[in-house]
Picture 1 (cartoon, rainbow, N blue to C red):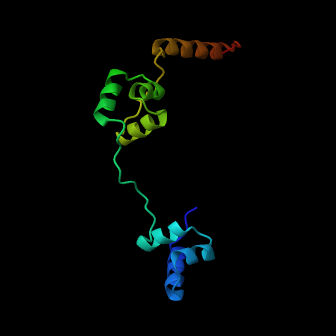
Picture 2 (picture 1 turned 45 degrees about the vertical axis):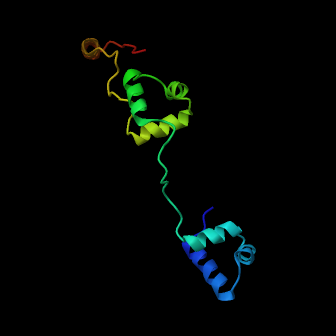
Picture 3 (picture 1 turned 180 degrees about the vertical axis):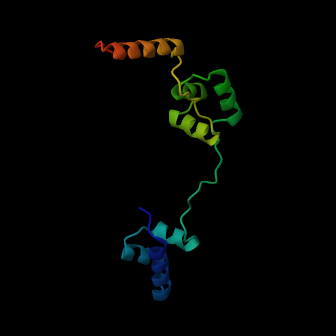
Length: 132
């Protein structure tokens, strides 16, 4: 768990005030020596990563998505020699998502219209009908 900035600041103040070394300060506050030395260099935690993606080439992934639009991520991972999670993150970076439709591809509007007419006729004639 990350320590708050106030706690970090207080640890460094006490270290300087009492003239303690990193090795003496760490057990006093129950943190590691490397944490205290890292806080001395930079108090705020690093929230972003500054390293670019290296394994998956963006242009290769875009061309793969164009060639195989229906492929699963694990299939792409096999082609690229990486993990499915790596492909997922690369697609997120490129803002590529699967196209979604609001209508079922096999829906037939004409058949639906005919069915609705039959239901209305049955309701007007008060004939019981089973939809299932």
